[in-house]
Image 1 (spheres, one colour):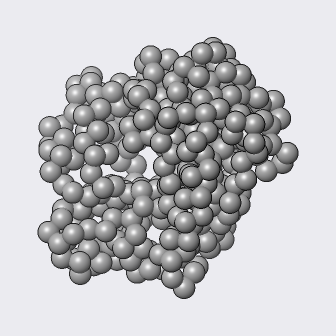
Image 2 (cartoon, rainbow, N blue to C red):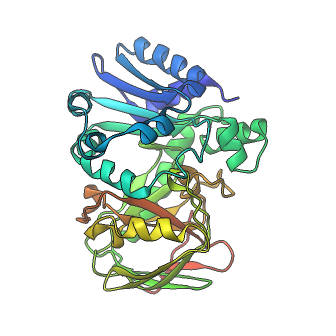
Length: 354
């Protein structure tokens, strides 16, 4: 199992950096109890108010089976108040079943996401962090034993290092060089098996994602020009958004929009997501993974999009800090592995991934 105290210190001192008197929302399942208790202690020691939001096994399944029309098309007013009046938040992903929502109608999920747009915007406006804690379900999803998965995640989080914060500072510095290299680029081209896609990023801002928001992280990303994607791409890393297995996704773009879409598995889900709203079939993000501590696919997007030597594209919502303007209830990262003969170029020059 991970070192809970070391984990809590990393979240506090690198990801959240709370100030005395801050209200910090901590969301997790009961399977992350060790992490939550350690984090509560660490926050109290830093003179912060922890607000614990703990979910029960089966809670999400119960919600989607019992929710009425009101619950899909509206939101509880208190949820918005909390997002607007708290200063920081951390969500610890620790599922008991990674496929719990596999049979939920994706149109219901999309409706609920649209209804919660104001909450999402307010939550993203505060300092936030998304992280994870090892569970048997995550280990099974990654085809690992529980102890093996915990060791793998410890490596991905840099908790296997004497000073994890120093490790993240070093990664941040390496990625800063990549951001500097890409900041003057206009055209990005992705080439791999069954893939040849170009898009424009000139004038957009590249972000150094160094673990302060996603933990673990290890990527640089930006929002491409919404009308610029041209060509075809095959995403070789499986995905399981909302517990639905989606593999072998292929997308064809014209003038920025998806015009053809297929998947070896989960195609109906893919097409439903693309049709969620007008922005769902446009790109909101391109990211390059740099975390060499994540060396294999695990079925968890938070990890897989950071694999060193991969590129990912997100259909749907842009991050405003990049200069992207696409709006959507969807933000789904799809990953293309470049480690076996693929490459990414910027204005014709190969980009070396640190």
